[in-house]
Length: 522
Image 1 (tube, rainbow, N blue to C red):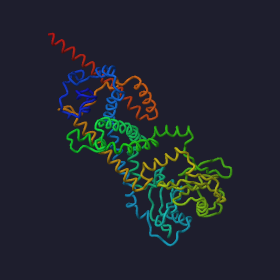
Image 2 (image 1 turned 90 degrees about the vertical axis):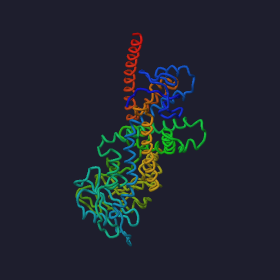
Image 3 (image 1 turned 120 degrees about the vertical axis):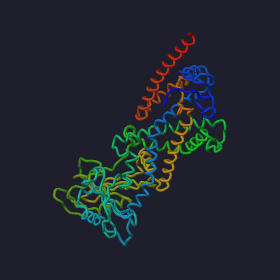
Image 4 (image 1 turned 30 degrees about the vertical axis):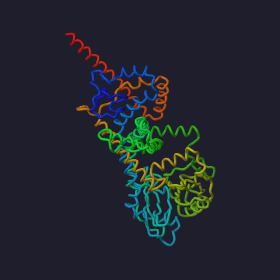
């Protein structure tokens, strides 16, 4: 893609201010930039901005347009991958229910067996590994999951979920499971594809890059669309595409109108996606810690032990009797799962729940609600394994505001908060983003003239911005770039390359002009 500025139509940018089609005459292009009627090179932009006395927005608009154009062209491939994989993920919840129906559902029986008997049946069928958690049947017809860690062939950050019929104790199967939402192999594969392209930690940079730039592109597009349509002052002109338009104007009409409708959703996806990204997510977590807004956890310390907290995948202590009371060599008495679950129910922890066994001597059972749909159920209690007494309670209602917002935001982003409706909305957002990208590239193609593919936006727009606007803007960008490094670093790199290419183009233009002048004199 050439970075040389080509002749714009009258207005702030090529083919933009007047709505002319790409092949409308706009003046010849000289070696150093546009010349002739309606043309303005980088130097001219600076002089015109200095004395025009126009509004701050009139000066900012070309800069926003250039940023929107280049960010869209260069970042769109990453956004396209994120949108396609996000679309697949939105459909994975329902697909999971169909693919794994045998493991997930059973005929409703007369009475559920005690949870200890269900766990014993799972361990008889799968004695490998250690019990890391138990998820009792959350509703009628649903199976119980017994989660095993340290199983050969299962990734260390995954568990083997053994599915047990709660009415008969029959084992229905075993599948690898990932994450707090209990994703099974199909959804896990799609989730990891969306998150890191199955490339591990390095692959997560792609999704962070996409999330870092999505809000910039979306906000810039909305501002440009409103500024373009402000003279028409009708809701229809702003909110609906112009079906009567043709060519690039028609493409832009659909791109702008659809972009306006989904802008808020795209901003939400960008913000929530950044909260658990690698670098920006760490900065967000540091900020939450500094202002006391981290997510609290129940204390699992009992009997004056030195260990606090709990580890969701730590596994039970080797030899611990998960099903009843009694002593095991080297360990204190254990009241068993049935008593633990009963104690949690007495503290109003209804289904769905997860029971995590003591991680080590001196720690407690932790029973947590795991409902991620509205209304959220995230209460948790710690229970002394020797006495069955509740030693600590943590209520979701007592979470700090940002901790609640983070929880709701992540669950809305992942399609859990409002179930099927949530997933359909996410699918619509993903499909809209795919269309916006396709339309954006089509406009780039239609912007070209003859052999010039995708005419770029002229340089020098920043020279038109008043100093009292430019300096605070630069400071804000620097701060945002610091906290969002995959926005700041690429932006700095683009500016550096653009400045170098501008200098090269200027030198070439000066040389060509001198040669032309010499030729005329000769």
